[in-house]
Image 1 (tube, one colour):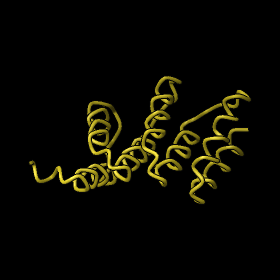
Image 2: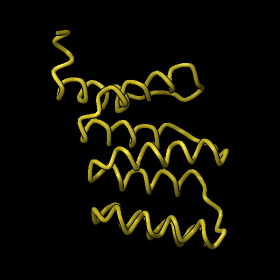
Image 3: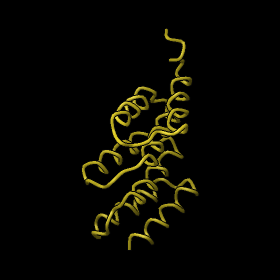
Image 4: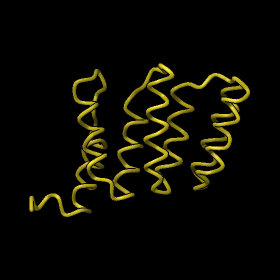
Length: 126
């Protein structure tokens, strides 16, 4: 069920096993187990831990397409994945997507985006 799979995916995240987390996530979809906010957040966070920003963004997009209610957690994880992967432009795009929405951005949101820019020397404005 959803709770069991989500717990297993969270364990994979903590163990830095993003590929295993993705396998479990795919297995859920194949078995028609309900994919919710917690599940998406856990698998995106697992990707974040290993700088898998491409996959994190694909999952965030799939979350929107599935019409799963979202919150700030998967966005922050995706922004952090972009930060770790050096994709500062993508990090800022996510912030700009969040700005007009009803999602409340936290210090974590801005910190990850600022860190992404700092890693790429974008803060210098050159």
